Amino acid sequence: MEIDEVPSQSPPASEQSPSPEAAPRRTLATKTLEICNHLKSNYNMTPKQFIEAFLTADSDALSFRRRYWGSKDGWPSTLDIIQKIKKQVKKTQKGQARWCEFIKNEVDVFKVARKLNHLSLTMMLYSPE
View 1 (cartoon, rainbow, N blue to C red):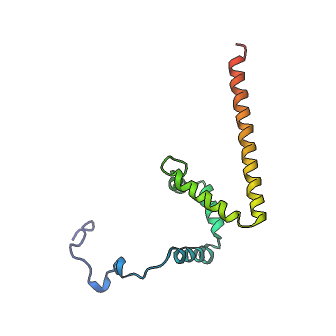
View 2: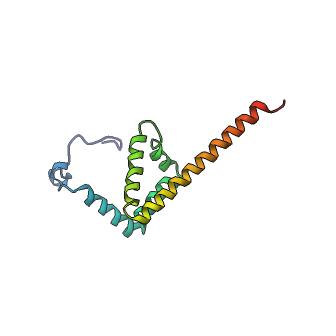
View 3: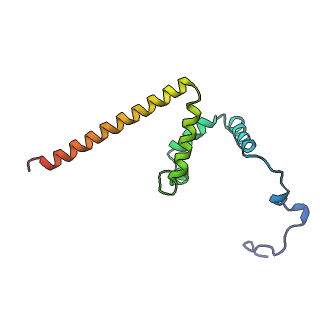
């Protein structure tokens, strides 16, 4: 048999992995906790550190995995994640105050950007040539 050829027979049943139906069912919460424990024990990372690295790392492979977050198709699930973060943060009065401050600051940034865009457009329209 050549190196590139694939054997035509399946491996014996004793060597085959169990079918997905035979695997015990684990809840999403159980799987998530297992991943959190894996991050901590193998990489000494918290879930928040992982999320931050996933969102900010300068890596083509990670950038590829983030590509739909702001797209038309990806935006609904991205917004859902933001809403879940909001719900988590706002569980306490201090968290509610921090969320309100965050939103206020975002509005301020938006207003400044809008004014700068308006100013730039005005300067382009009325600048002497």
